[in-house]
Image (cartoon, rainbow over all chains, first blue to last red; front, top):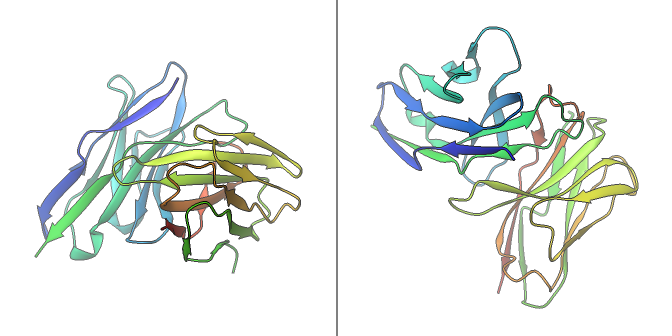
Length: 115
Length: 113
């Protein structure tokens, strides 16, 4: 079975500082990887996804993530955060062989950007 | 604009009552999903459907029911058998192949008193 672990439940950071949100997954078969963002009382919005090719993926709002197959990780980074980045972030995977599109989510990381 | 519409945004119900959450999409997606979100637990899959008139249980289907009579619609009923129904419910859709991300509605916050 597949699982996703987000290693930090909360990450406080000052405005304009860099941030890394960590995600590790467990799977015996190949997966696609996603990062979603959720603002309070809203749905999820896709930040970026890794399907194949270059392991460094760039997304919206200045975020990027690096797929590391040997470490089964997909950490999300931003070089300089803004107050508006305060939100909950979810890492998710789906099997490349899937014909259902089902996502398996991590527990989420709350990013708190302080002025 | 294409998207997923969930209604209502907030819902209050008395304990023991069934309640139905609406989810409509105009993205022409084959697959639709219902997730439940609780603090610190991420999103857990309740039910999903890949085609009209067919659906499968997810990881936490007990106490819930769904229907898929139209491609655009996938309503979720929270029954009185659900022991802890207060949560944030998210509906999503996708073209079903894993290469394309799922698109989410804005959610319904259900509070049972």
